[in-house]
Image 1 (tube, rainbow, N blue to C red):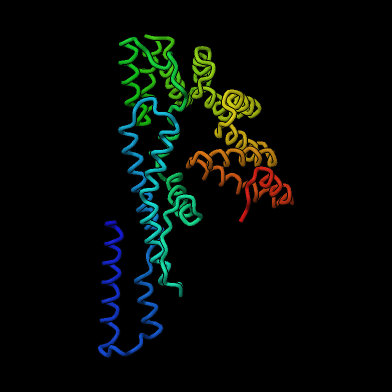
Image 2 (image 1 turned 120 degrees about the vertical axis):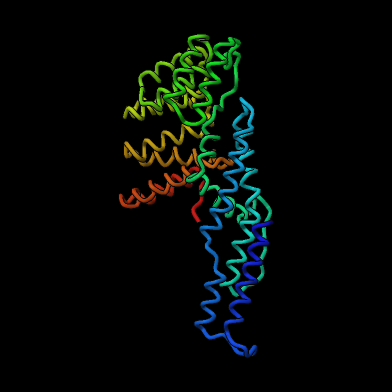
Length: 336
């Protein structure tokens, strides 16, 4: 509540200053110009307010990432992100509504703390949207290894573990070229060390060695056929290689093992909308991704929503507005 108290003090000071400068005659009404000046003083920078609260949520996510346990499930990560956003929503909502009260005739201020209410959801999504665009910690949290661990996920070889941990230090700093030799040594010490293989492939992909990344991901799948990291990343590599049919094929393989995976639908939707102009299928895939993201309270829902908006603009230009809204209706998405 510190920010809110500071706000009230600031507003009180602003009012006192404005009144003192108006006139010694306390019964005199402020002129329209003076009233406008006072309202300009009282009017807050709403973008700055959002940035303050969203930044606090981002710091909260960053703290979680520093203390999280290896192998935390995706549901745990999403829950912690939701908690970080929830901590900021009530005060952010309060400050925004106080600001609105200066311009609206209705001076009653109601703070809705029901997380399922449209009011709460609106302010929650304001913060969530800012985070999706500007919080690197959120991206790091959501892109971390989500798959269920198997007996091959880790290694019992001391040298493999040592090299792996050295690689992780660089990987966490996005120093992919520096991390690469350590993961390579880890896989040489233990060729069945799946996490080391997956991270080695990530480094190859990030340093532009796409064919080597594909080879390593396929080695990982040979050991663990349902490995989510290679299944998710193989189609990404084909997309980077501009081989869109193989990318779609890769995403369908991911869906075969994980039928409710939003990333697969999102990936296919993006390819259809951005690269192949298959707008109808693209919107359908993206709607499915949006619904799953929304159900799981994933911040990536913002990305799906943005892509749907891009597709709508293009379909409207092509006179396919009716088809667009039918796809949304078929996916139980209403437009208000």
